Image (cartoon, rainbow, N blue to C red; front, side):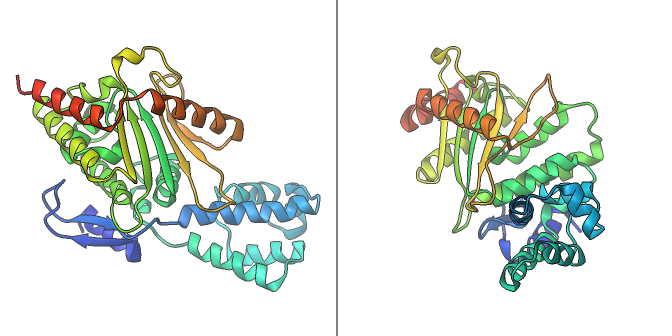
Length: 319
C-alpha cells in the first residue's frame, strides 16, 4: 500500500481523499478538522495529575498503592506512556473519582488508542518528533519562525525532497519517499472547514536559499505567493526584511503550538544545530518565545510587501 493511501486509511473521519493532487501528481489529502489523539492524551494526564496533587499525593505513593509504579504514573501524567483501562480504574478508585468523571476520563483514554497517520512513520522518526506530529495535527493555532528555509507546512513536494536529501547523511535513500509523504500529510491542517490558524515569519534567506536548484525554488516561491493570496484570515505568511538587522529570533527555527483545551499548555518545537531538537512546555520559556514571535511579526513585511518580494525573488530566479 502506498504511503499516502496509508495516511488516508489511518486518518479515518479526519481526512478526505481528493484526486489530481497538486503536490505529488497523485492523490492528496484534505483535513476536515484537527486530529486530537495527542491532545486528548495530554488532557488525560493533566486531569489525573490535578486529582493526585489535590490529594497531596506523590507519584511514588500512588504507584505503590495502585501497583502501577511511580515512574509509570509520572510518565502517564505527561502523556509519554499509554494508560490502560485497568490502570485508569485503579487510579480512579484510589482518587475516589465520581462516576461521571471516570466516564469522561475513559472517553479520553479510548481516543488516545486510535491509530493515526503519523504512527505509520514511527520507524523513521524519533519518539519526540512523532509526538510533535501528533500535537501539530491537533493544534488550534501555530506560530512559526524559520530563518533559512521554508517550513514543512508550506513546502512543495520537490522542495521537501531536496531538503530531506540534503539535510543529513544519516537518512537512508529508502526513507526519503516516506519522509516527503509524511510532510505532505502534515499540510492537511491548512485545508478543510477547520484549518489551523497559522502565522509564519520567514527569514530573508529562506526565500533565497536555492534548495533543489533554481527551478525548484521558483515553484516554491509561486506556491508561497498562491498561499499568501488565498487566505489572509487563517493563514498569514510574512517575510522578514534584511533591513531588520538583529532581532529576537534571528537564526531560529521555532514552532509554537496552542490548543483549544484548557488542560493542554502551549508547546514549542525548537530546532538547533548546537542542541537536540525537541518539545518544550515550560511556561516561562513559552512566554518568552511567544513574546519574541509577536515582536518579529510586527517587524516583518506586511502582506502586500511580502507578496511583492516573493514575486521579485521568483523573477530573479529566472535570470
